[in-house]
Length: 255
Image (cartoon, rainbow, N blue to C red; front, side, top):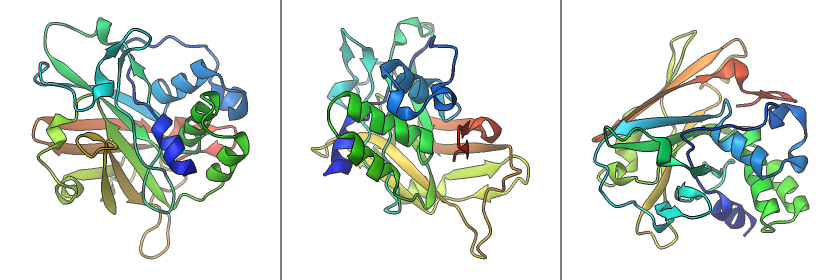
């Protein structure tokens, strides 16, 4: 029940122009002290979050009612379903979009790519639910204490139409996480398409990658500085780079 509550609070959003406090909340204070601005910074403007614009039809309808503009938050993105952890599912918040400053010369669709197995993103998800009064702090702490046995990357957008014609097997075969130093390519162990509560639309896709090789060695060494996530479906080819050296909180590296 707790996981459903937290996942229901995780709204994905993109900001074309992000101006937040100078201090990084994930380093300057514990997540229990984060306010809404801190949470949004983690979701939209942190080393764990990437936003890309993919050229394509702009007048197709969003895949979720929550993708329509609202007076309070601009164009809000659909919700994420699922939770991180041994189950292979992924939780994780994602913010609200102001597309008013996006270029109008060509149509494009914004996609958010997040490293959702990270402690920082999970803390932001829990804190978001706490601020909304949806969970108790002690329940959030219990959820965060659960181990995460895979790296998880989430892709979401207010318009996931490009993903409607593919299944999880096809997504698994067209996705890779390539390490910059070793050039090793990690294939997903699983892919989970997360749908709306009524099952009528796709809200996000979660890609899980192994933390250990068959021999038991870490798949991403502590000396590795970066990783490129790439995936493609007809109408949407996404490539983003994560700077692993910057993905650290007060406790150290956070993947």
